[in-house]
Image 1 (tube, helix red, strand yellow):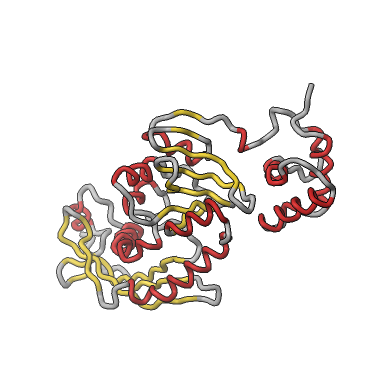
Image 2: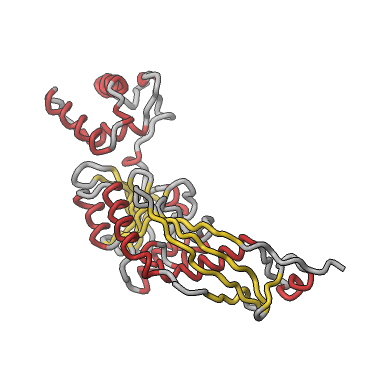
Length: 320
């Protein structure tokens, strides 16, 4: 019975293990394999060889034991036909698909990086997955493309980060690959650090706590910390829940009764505040309609923007 890997591929993969190729950054790994192909006069697709190695990595080096059932090749996965409304599950699993003016595929960009791209109308990239990060096109788009973005959102992928970037960055990742993931994150950190002071309210802010209860949440931005790596931490002082000028305890049965179908607690208060700040930070976050699909307390974990809440003690209430 035939094996999925040739003898030369097996020999290369064992050599890659000795050179700890898996621990190198993607671009370094690609350059290493390309140089090896050139120095040994090896014909074939060096890009595919590199990614086949990553997808089928075995720490013990027993590549000769890989069977067709074990073998992984993302570029050879059969494209599935589906509807736009079902596209999300294919995107999250990074399975090639074709829907109505919406499709996803694995491809190599110019430097040889293997990326998964979701296109609107076959040419406009709305999502790109590269090395553990989903990049989302943040530029303005047509109503139809907005629907494509919503319906193909990779919400089922809980392990990967999601980062909003502009059209130029999407084009670079998709084609030229000049900017690495690290370059893009640093650029966004720098921009956020420069703009964050002007993006958030400077005064005490009042928010309606719920549609069916006349209570307000009061909070104030205490300070903004930016560490040596450029990570931004917004520290928020939460004064609490108020009925007019009087602070109330959300655990008070009388207060709970007024909220009825809304469960008010510390976490919900934090989420309400974050939703308020959402519009101010929209250039750094997924479109607002996406938050209902993301189980990440509205704010996706980009790794360099976080909120820290300091809550005032809850007032006492009459338990009689």
